[in-house]
Amino acid sequence: MKPLWLKKFMFQLSNSPSRTALINGKELLFFSGYGYLGVQHDTSFINLVEDGIKKYGWLFPSSRISNTQLSIFDEMEAMLSSSTNTAASVCFASGFASGTAATCLFKNHPISVCPEAHPAINKLQQAALGFDKWAEKTVNIIHGNSFAKTPVLIADAVNPLTGEVNDFDFLNYIEKPSIVVIDDSHGIGLLGNNGEGIIGLLPRKENIEYIITYSLSKAFGINGGGISCTNKNTADAIKALPDFSGSTAMSPALAHAFIHAQKIYTEQRIKLKKNISILKNLLLQNELIINDDRLSIFVLPQQLDEQFFAEKNIIISSFGYPVSTGKKINRAVVNALHTEHDLMQLAEVINFYKS
Image 1: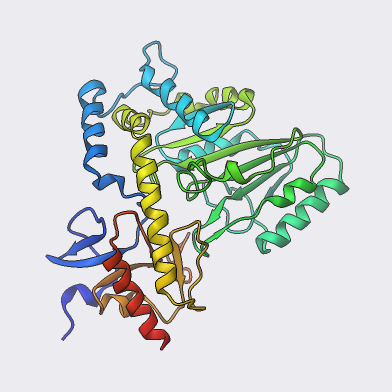
Image 2: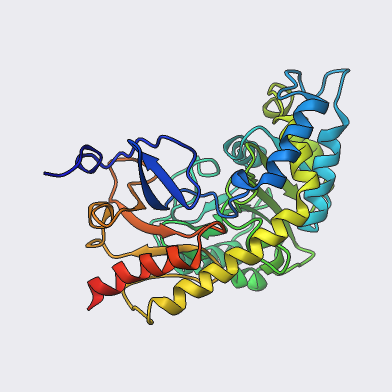
């Protein structure tokens, strides 16, 4: 008879997962979620959060344009701009709020949205094409037409469902002025030499303005979001929106932790990259598994579902997205907390299936 926790696959966790998770008192290996760097379980990071609470409190329930401001938010935005090598940044209480604000400036512009763009930045009917086909079509449309307003391209940096980093080299072929909005929630903190995200992989051209929006929870372990702009005027325009003025800011304690945790993020990023390399080597060039070695997402075949792994005391990510009724995508998500032994156990299960 199967234990109760195996009968349902909407796992109810009894604690905050790290490399493992508790379900009804049973400890299982946890290869799900998006806590890539695992800082939520790092003692030094937790101490920084506690220091921030003592100094600023957990919340600062006030408008960002009131006559009483906490300086920590300006410091946070300066840090985001420095990290992404952009002109100016704006922080929000969530990545979704950031994405919504980043796109609402351009309601009257011609817009091209890439396939499977995140709902926060995709308010239109998206292209029914693959990314490369969409990119090619977009270049042709921009070159073949005259526009009263600057065309806007909207895309994700990373497709977490397919485990791919999207290739933006096609922007080299765009010669007309264009605005590119990219959701980098699954890339910032991970991609680039210093975790700067997709911005470090983009062609920097005078005719292209970049607006990079992102969640701060995936890599950085804090509830919040940000927008980094290569044009300071765009950041100023975002701060004039009701989305900014009418919303409560992110936790100042978490902003404090972010500012002072840069060394921790670097150390955890090194550990994560090592874990990705270890697992790739253990998987014996398994052609069934899809992984870009810049990411810790390993896409699994349909046969290797949550039940298959649960019976081996392993939890993977398996759900339909962005709607729950969609086709389930099976993924093993590695984080910086996993040990080599954890990775060996996962690889053994996957390789056994292959054999």
